[in-house]
Amino acid sequence: MPIIEVEHLTKIYRTQKRLPGLGGAVQGLFNREYTEVRAVDDVSFTIEEGELVGFLGPNGAGKTTTLKMLSGILYPTSGKARVMGFTPSERKNDYRRQFALVMGQKNQLWWDLPAQESLYLNKEIYGVEDEAYQKVLDEMTELLQVKKLLGIMVRELSLGERMKFELIASLLHRPRVLLLDEPTIGLDVVAQKNIREFIKEYNQKTKTTIILTSHYMNDIQALCDRVVVINHGHKIFDGRLDDVVEKFSQSKLITVSFKNGNISKDQLAPLGNVLEYTQVKAVLKVPRDQVKKTSNDLLTNFEVDDINIEEVPIEEVIEMVFKEGDQ
Ligand SMILES: Nc1ncnc2c1ncn2[C@@H]1O[C@H](COP(=O)(O)OP(=O)(O)OP(=O)(O)O)[C@@H](O)[C@H]1O
Ligand SMILES: [Mg+2]
Image (cartoon, rainbow, N blue to C red; front, side, top):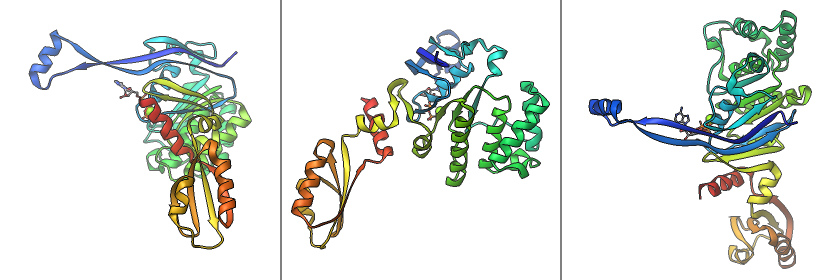
């Protein structure tokens, strides 16, 4: 049985329209008008235990809203979510003890306490036994290399260091389901990589089920075989990341270098869209089904030194997927 089941999940935010000024406030009392935002619209998917799924979508797509419904912070307008057999919005304590939500944009640690004490408070809140706490703490601070920072006030930690402690705090009670909402946002490349590697290792070692949102394709590529893509609240893709490329990218890139540097751009133009050009090297964007023929043409008609065929960068493909959802 899947550990997460989402069926026709929908969230409509209703916010009151208000005219400016006092008139607006008075009018608001008698004549309430609402604007509706369909943040999540009829989304269904299932996730098996141990999976690490990437949740992708442009700003405002409905990712955080979905994760909040899975955590029980928000009630769905309609449809349902079940996680580990629980209905999150019932907010049972048994459920709370088995999942965690980490939001990169939000601080969940106590700002004015040393990291260690902030973690200790989390231990108490979740009722984690002393021994288990010590074990997780040792293990995680080692893995994330933050042992020597335990005595530092949370507010004095760098963003990356704080994120590491946020992760540790969320894992103290060893949740079976971990929801990570942009855990690497704003971090430098090194910190991003550290966190990324930690998440990967943690998932492989503990088989914790993880949903991860990130705007950094590096994160998604390194961590997630499967991605769910949403846009404007709708699910537009669910499958292997590689298949996103197959499905949405109609072209490939052929990079070719020439033995003698007297090839003109005009000679190449009939073969494909010339993205980059110097006299010795060019990059052509070519429809998928013509890659073979074009490579052949290049090899027979020019003195080719080297030829290389690649997929269009994933960022670009994802951008196209998002755009498609706009129509
Ligand atoms: N509390 C709220 N009240 C009204 N509208 C909201 C509320 N929270 C979110 N929204 C709207 O719902 C939509 C989805 O927002 P959500 O935060 O889920 O997107 P997201 O995919 O997480 O985006 P981002 O990548 O920017 O974090 C947006 O249009 C947003 O403006
Ligand atoms: Mg969000």
